[in-house]
Length: 415
Image 1 (tube, helix red, strand yellow):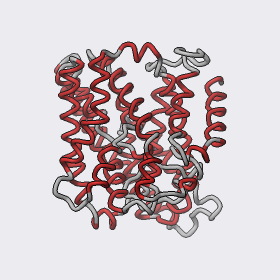
Image 2 (cartoon, rainbow, N blue to C red; image 1 turned 120 degrees about the vertical axis):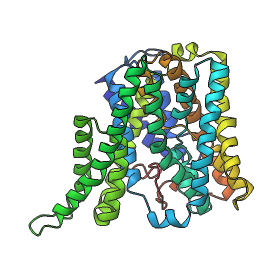
Image 3 (cartoon, rainbow, N blue to C red; image 1 turned 30 degrees about the vertical axis):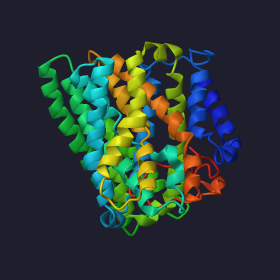
Image 4 (cartoon, rainbow, N blue to C red; image 1 turned 90 degrees about the horizontal axis):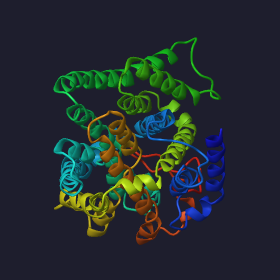
């Protein structure tokens, strides 16, 4: 109950400060992260959470599921077909370069074996523009820049997941266990995709029956009920819930646009609350001991991941495109590590692989640095594009291919 009280207090403070956050380097994401750290064992000692605590895995799991479900609902296949080239280069070339670059830095600076080093690279490969809401939510910012950040961040979570799972299996204690895990991974991914496509189609088919259908007041609850059933079905059958969530959101938005439109405000609010809860819990894990366990090489690797590896890999992938230099630099900088990396990092820790603890420590510190760096720079950079009315950041939901949810639930906040 103490954790609930802390969350409520942090949410109240975030709402009261949201107007200020929209105009300054302050961000609601950072508030929850710092709030979680302050009440943890490392400082005030009000809550006692360890990486192995069930609440950590459950909160992160729910947050990522909610984010991917709402992300999938913003898939615009028409826009994706019209402007796929730059995001495809970022995903097809930039993401592998960042993946490999992080693996090299991890191996030589932190001393992890090659398999675990590539695992760290895969976990930190996904990006999350939720910390750049002053950029991706404004019409003053060029559409191709917004679309590049949104499409890249929405798809790279799903692309990284199979790689993370395979590398966890490869880093396991025995070859036999790894071989068995490969088959399980394939089955989980196939089941997740199948559930994510079939369940929304089944629900939409039921709605078309003459005697069935939701009245307008309850229509927003139809996608919510679908998501709840999907989440439970995935965990009961060991299907992959993240692939299921994203595919289900995309299918619902395609075959039931009215339900999507009715659900959007509620879905964004629920996803926002889940993200804030996950940030609070993650912040509670950022104790002085965790930072003390990381070597100097680990700190150098975390800084390089933010200021060199991501920017360099994206700039190389966009070489020769028509994007001007300012837009390229902004896109290269905004490669923050978000909720997918948190969840995948916990998977690494809980897998029991030989160097899992060292890998998780590096991942956690890198995510914390990224949240601080990127959530505090989106407003200053937004002003480069003459975005002056930042108080309404996030109020307009820009057309997204696969977005991270922004601040619709808190219209004047900046996450």
